[in-house]
Length: 307
Image (cartoon, rainbow, N blue to C red; front, side, top):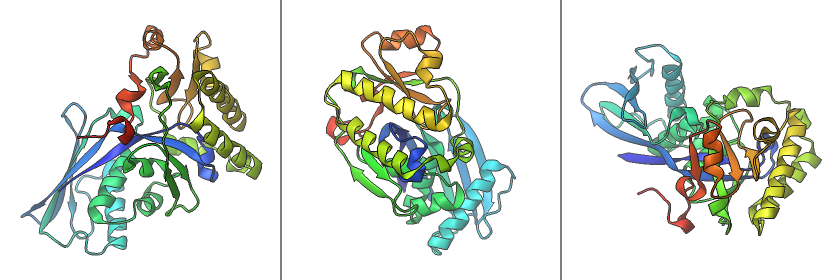
């Protein structure tokens, strides 16, 4: 059996999505694969392969207790995931003597595109369990990333219920998408830590409503000038909640267009709206990982799905 899960990017409502604000999120073409095979040996074998084909993690687990042979953070998390899968589906591991799992990433783990959320989705697909419940029991988080893992295109995501969120497919395909770029900031942000440090008491009902309205407007902006203004408005709003200076003011004040943080502020990718010179601008500043919208985002309407 072989399964696939998309990576993710959160375009609006970072942090506020935790409190129930509606967010705009997009699945990426790059994701993670999981191949599962039955084996003759009574154990679980796990192997993780990176985007370059190198094995970056390997371990074996007891099929009854799921105890990893080598104790480490990854092994302990996998054990937690296995245990929760059995809670939801007691028969998940009973169909063979042993099981071999081989996961393969399409993207660099340091990019923050969802190595954990894609893993959760893949194991949920294999184990026939609720991926949102699996995430909440082991990792926590808003769940938008898990929703993106199996989305067919852009979505509006509202955490109405942690294990049964509201997911609405939308047609986010602006006529200026050729002017949208995703730039990696050369550092990994720990989203779990960022979320834990955020004071959710700042998410008042009026702020959540304001951010949800901004998401709706963001999703339907008719021209690039309006879209850039919405990017700046969103940055100021979230920056006020965090007590933080928006990324463009800190690092890219001389950029001709607009730059917006994505997900947890301080690392991973930013969204840049500009022109044909955008990629060169960021490369000259040392940010060499720059994707055009159509190069990275998965969308049925664009014919950009995997396979």
